[in-house]
Amino acid sequence: MDKKNVKILLVDDNDVTREVLRVILRSEGYDVVGEATDGSTGLEMAVKLKPHLIMLDVVMPKISGIEILPRLKELVPTACVLMVTANKDQATIAEAVKTGIHGYVLKPFNAQKIIDTVAGVVAKISK
Image 1: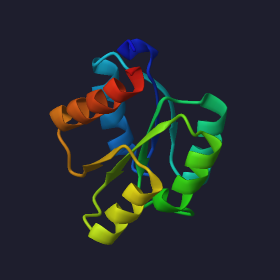
Image 2 (image 1 turned 45 degrees about the vertical axis):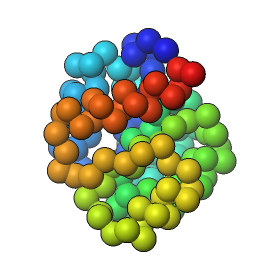
Image 3 (image 1 turned 120 degrees about the vertical axis):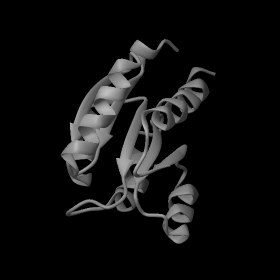
Image 4 (image 1 turned 90 degrees about the horizontal axis):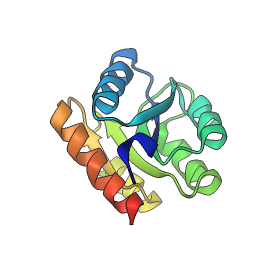
């Protein structure tokens, strides 16, 4: 799948994190189709936009990324999910993996880590 055809939704309550992700992804040619600042809005946008990839923060106000993960998998089963988190707690990561995420990126991250991780997931989408 060509990068420009890969639709990505960013769900993170931190404005700077979303902006950095958007700039990195768009500079690589990906289509960032939406951004949400909390889990419930992210879930609504995912259902509406049907992204190929959702980059989901773990810790957010109202409802966490871990809490909406099962609903995302149910309502948008074709979407791949990459968790983006500063949380290094192994139990949290294990819970996310058990729910079927396609990878995770620890904050703070650098551009190359995002590029490589997203490219790896996109390669799986393309198959």
